[in-house]
Length: 208
Image 1 (cartoon, rainbow, N blue to C red):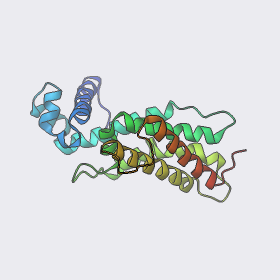
Image 2: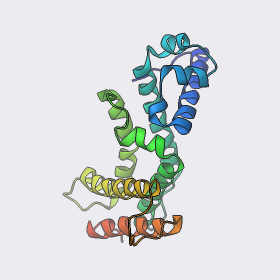
Image 3: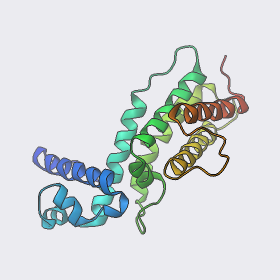
């Protein structure tokens, strides 16, 4: 996992990471090469190799940064006082907005879209702490005694992940014949909310 450095080095790292994010947004995961990142950062490939050691180092640092961004989105969603279900749904909707804001970034984080890229265990643990654990923190207080809140959080997480992934797939293509969901933000948001609420209700959480 990437470590923190001095101010000058941090500035250099940030410049390269912003360049990598720009490449990811404009060219997708296939465009994440040392050369493209160097060009976006207005530097030479030597600069990328010196700072990150190569493409895998860039990918590791970008993976860390994208989960930092998701963490910030989650942290900005306050609990809903007196309505735990609404608070959980708000966090789930933040996840959906984050995915829709940049499908390429979402694919890089969750869809194993870069062949051969496998974040090391420390990075995977960081990703879990930055995202999944925040959802678990929100469901733990309403999880019935004797039930593992991690399992509760996992069921909600996989529901929101599945709904978002399928939505992104459909948005990137023409809908199949007689598709029953209107391809609008409002229609998909309604289906998403219904799915999350159904899972919350089905888990019999202590919401009162």
